Length: 557
Image 1 (cartoon, rainbow, N blue to C red):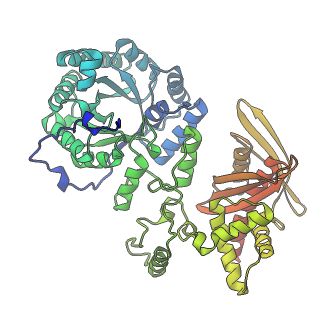
Image 2: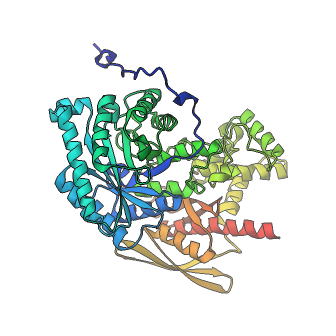
Image 3: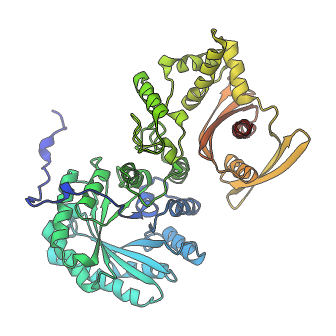
């Protein structure tokens, strides 16, 4: 007998609203955003972020434009406590950014939380307790009044502690945890009891956060819950209604969007949806959804490659190639009919008119992608055959992204010669395109040192009789070299792709490295080969940068 039995589950009960207004609403402005990457996102990682990774992600969140950032759970984690102190003590919080911290409604935890925030100019203290039916009855064994007492006591403690630090501008936030699993009338009662303590005003509002701690229903039912709550809660004009959705049913973004339509003012989420179980609501997706509808998302997502690089480095999680808006393949057309439609639309495009291009919901250039990723040749168009020849005859195992890049060079060569392109021709063209660096900067001697877990590189660049010394720092030799070249060229350089393998099976076989860089919004590929893997990596990076310089030189000629 199968264990896959749907009968052990019960459907989520509808709200029973007959006066819903949210289906007719349109989102015409961005909600208030709060990033919870450094708290909710971090606590979900197999290996939590190091201090360096937290710092790197913090800088990225600030750069994107988040004005509220939840930085941790300082009362529960010494690492979070230290990170909060580092931000405050080193004056790393911009004037227009407010940090947020999470704390349970417990006396000792609340007191420690305020200690961690001493000296902050502004802060949101986010206090919560479990209110759901299942937690109330099966975990805590309390009645409704018992849960309300916990919430009120927590609110009183927060207020009392805040009075001890009058130099800080405090904002209070309360979450009835597992709001979606809490009876709506009880959720209103709990929140009313909390706000009765805090006494918010329209000038100094309180944040009431209504989390789908576990996504339990379809997004429309969540919207019904939000609208019902907004209609019934006391002092609505003095509250900021916040959403915190999770992706257990795969609908976190949809739930947040409908929740905003239903009256919410604020949304909490993470970059690329990292978080507990199936993740938090993906801020990138929701913000780009708004952007594609002509609404300013109030977040700058123009350099998507950099954002992805930071997320991957800090979380050690991959980004799916078909991740909405951000994935490597989301603007790619392999179908011949799709390619033809895109080409025709682009050729006829009037820059003064609104964007209307078949199969492309936005202009890829808006997020730092070039049109070279749009029209790509698949195996039916010859890319696979080119890669097969290079691997069969020469041992080069080109990654997919380099296959695509190189196929355009082979196609152009074949069209120019108007003849069959043989194996030797393909390899010669590959060397010319990615391996040969004559006439441009060459890598000379280099030295790598490591101090306080940071790598530092000194290297020589040579061009004819000219020699330059460059230096850079980073996490590893490759990152240090990229940093050095950024300083040398004065251009923003992001390592997008890296791949390497041995050319042969012997112990002394050469290594080959394939590199793709984003340089000022355009992508360039390079390749390096050497008996030393580090040398091969640096050569590949330098050759990609040389290609960028050659393109710029040719454009100016």
